[in-house]
Length: 509
Image 1 (cartoon, rainbow, N blue to C red):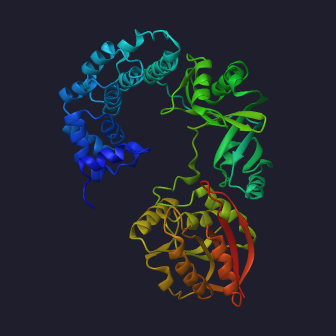
Image 2: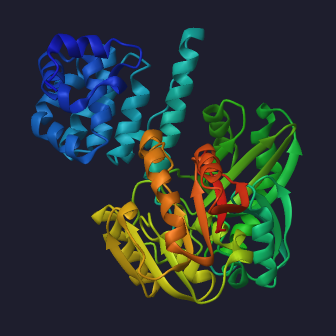
Image 3: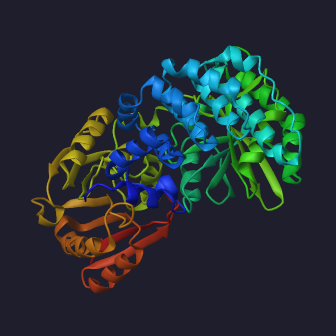
């Protein structure tokens, strides 16, 4: 495609999605001219978005001198001054500090100052921020800007505080925790817990509750994704949450942090709010209510997550420890687009356990990064792990992961529909292309048809195929079409990244 003209770029910038709707590569020359020649605020906003990526950040730094930045910071248009400050915060160039400080000290439009304050924080300019007091709103029209200015100052000063690091020393025993697990796999995880000598029960959809008697034993369970410590369940409107957390949660949280980590406060945390409320505003109020000398709200550099979930009239507050060692998936050196999460792969294998056998010969015809093969090998001994993928990059990643897992394997780069097995396999296990995010349904129809034709030739007489896919209707249709040779033994639906894939166990007639 040809590059946008200045007129086309102006038109795109004026659309409702504005800078977000711009193809940066096609508009780069025209955006640069609009910024450098005219100080266009919308084009400058597009530059701010671009500066979040290294290649564009370097291009901007090469085109925009410190003198040019000073000119934008002093522009007549307040929106241009605001976006210039935002760009300073993204570029983080030390040579822009003096111009930014001067612009901030001379600024008279309140809506510009929050961006200037955040940029000063990003550039590490502590002195000017520590001595600055946000003026009170002179009238109703200024209240919003005064609030935004106070919030920006708190965020900027928080970013300048040195966040201490704490070494985990252990978890409190015999304490109830909730495990976040794949939907419809709760019973599978409970079975795993029992095998590890732990108890478990469903607590909600995608949640299993267990008594944490041994973290080491819990690490033997491969199908849980997150471990949450419940601190408090309460009822009350969102406007009261900040004070409830300050009075009733903060003491419990600090006590637990002292038990888990070596050293003392302050502790860095982030807030994850899962509720139908104004999340930004309520999160800020909660952060303001908690003791800043003991708890530092640091969304980009934290050790714990304070998670607030609302279910109906009830609100539950959890803490998640983000720096606990978890070696379960240390083999995962790389991934590719649409790689299955290892906890989901482990859950699929555990769910299929009644159909698996020791020392099996296992084939994954769409092996991707090798996760399904590795989790199958982690579950029980295997005789053969054989992976096929049409992508050389996928095979390279799978090889690295399988090596790290210490597995014995064979991988080939090939179109699996052209593969003929010299020896039959006991199991075919695969995370098949979903047809969304990567690929499309039309391509899948052809691929799945050929795979189903191949299954009888790949599998031994009592062999099984374990297929994980979003193409649920297509699989059912193909099972009917190939009913003379294939039989559905079991099926379920689960959840992954907002999708609800199906898991199928298919046998040979």
